[in-house]
Amino acid sequence: MWFAIDFSSHTPVYVQIKDNIKASILSGKLKTGDYIPSIRNLAKDIGVNINTVARAYRELEIDGVIRPQRGEGYVVVGVQSEQIREELKDELLKLLRKCKASGIKHDELIEVVKKVYSGNGGEEFDT
Amino acid sequence: MILKVENLHKYYGYGRKNVIKAVNGVSFEVQEGDIFALLGLNGAGKTTTIRCILGLCKKDSGDITYNGKYKIAYVPEGKDLYGSYKVKKMIEITKSITQEFDENKCLKYINEFKIPQNERVLSLSNGQKTQLYLSLVLSQKADLYIFDEPTWGLDPVVRNRILDMIKAIPLEGGTVFYTSHILSEVERVADKVAIMHQGRILEIGYLDDIKESFCAVTIERSASKSSTVPEIDGYLYKSTEGEDIYIVKKAYAEERHLDFQPVPFEVLFEALVLGQKSQEQDKTV
Image: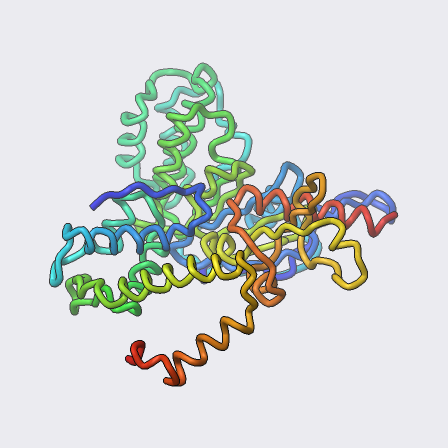
């Protein structure tokens, strides 16, 4: 596996590794049950320190994207639910920025959030 | 933990007035497998710190603990070897005075770098001399490798080759501690950094964490001067016509509901080091 790391980017290297692996899963290059490279091999391939790759894998494991296979490395679990959540949050973020730019107050927005999460008038969002 | 430095002090000069506090209370830890970069401008105290670690100069106070099984391998700033010796002879001498020296490994490097073995050291180019020095040191079995400005004066191709060699050290179980003032290089190689300035460490940690924990905020100058807005707790990076740009902790910006932008490491470094300078000047005025 190889992808380019932008070392001078303000995006931390471990985040770039996470994003690249997630992108590989989303695009179908990596499928559920596939092995991803060992920490050592990926470190070697993309020219990044082992500690940094280990950190990316640790976080991907916490996010439920990969899981360790006893003694054999890491396999892909999937990226679905987590990905959708992130996309939704991104959409919300854009919308919130528009709200802010058009002068809607912080408190007003908090009221909307409260309304949805307390269930009053926000039934369609129930989880 | 392979190396621990606690509250290290090293002063140069005599009398009360002329003392230079080259290292002024420096503490850090290097863990196994780290590539740890000590980063700072010329004269920040990097080389003195290394010399204290190696026992090449006497520290004034502080503790240094080294936990390795083997001796520390070291490439100094001036890559001086015996000029009148041929490369071949230089390898033999190194072998005779170095414990755990792998001659075959060394010859492999020498061949890779295409350094002529029958050439005298003084007739090698600057790049070849550095490559020879690194070949000798990397063939020494060590838990910790220390490099002082290893890529100084090298062309980009050779520099990249050297950086790749440094990057490969943790893959074979070693640990690296090195100094540099070239930020782009440090970003490519190191995973942990300490920013040193005027004998002190300003910021230390994983490079990724440092990048993530700082951001830039833009403050309108009229607002920052009014009494209702207290001063910004950060480093002034730049001033435009109507605004001041500060580098602050992200947590601080969020707490204060300030709009913030991510910043590249270079900007962060500059703000920290230059900001520090202005603060110190203020104090003395």
